[in-house]
Length: 444
Image 1 (tube, rainbow, N blue to C red):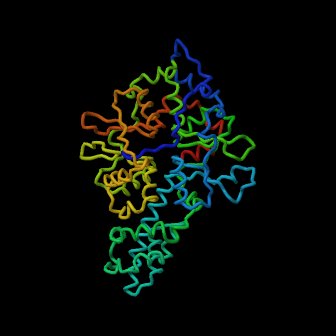
Image 2: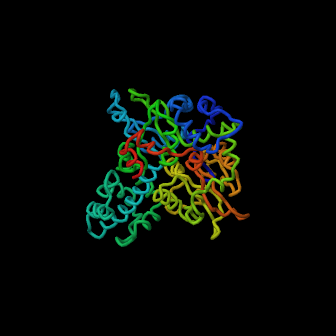
Image 3: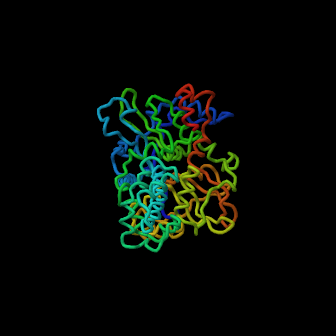
């Protein structure tokens, strides 16, 4: 967003000599440079990729509460982390030791479902005044939504809602009032029901991993090829890939889209990189989507609607625009949900908070996390090299393509798109390395 951007790896890779040592500078470039690079990446082992900053992968125990998990992600300025099983500390099998990846996308799904369910519970709880059992109505509300898993408990536990309405805040609301109206008028009390009362207060990472998984947990061995990593991060849409040493259960490295693009930026000056980077993005088919396919949010729309659009479309961020011409004024990323979770005093009425007001409130914190970063944009005639530089130097995950003086958004270029410009998938490559079951899992 205009105030804060996604950062998975804040340290820029200063050198890529070890990483790209198999690719030598050439005075004359081959006719199909992408095929040559693909073959070169296939010969480079994953073990040659630089380690994460500090050399240690940040992990989160599966019994950690969600709010504490958000604090850990925020403190380390990362979007995701492997979730470790506290019940399998001595296991030598990574499938037992790790339960998956916890990230902001999973937390967004949990918060949105919890918010909707809590609102219905609060609204339904007013039925007690009419002689209807609150627990019964809450359960019916849950069944009507078809909810399952940890969030469904909210429909059966109206004691939390009772704490919010005990003071008569909802006394003037009839059973017919919709959930959104009830939540809007309850304001801060509604927020407390979501995060400070049961069962939400005790929700752990473990309980949301399976229900709210956005992408598969797919570790890669250190002796695998870098081409497999690049394909998983681009064509197969993974944001991160854990690296595990053969016959060892611990995660040795954690390769993200950001780290790869920053590595590419570090290769500026090499013939093979400069040849591709000098080309206009339009020559490379970027942006891959048309203008009418860009998902955006008007500045006057609710911030929860922005997160809902990210959830529904499985994307990590959307531009904040104004007017029919979609003039870009900011950006909201999936990790911005942390502000709603960590600063409730700023967003007590978050169901009424617009995207514009949300951005202003974050800036008002005056902290590093609230630093204003203008929307990162480029034009259709921009070179791929300039796009890579913007993404790497600003540590962001997407750049918006604009047209005309009005800064109308006509496309989006992501880290995934950039990586795909340097490689292609050889026939049956993924099947030969991982098997058909993995391809089916990735294509789900």
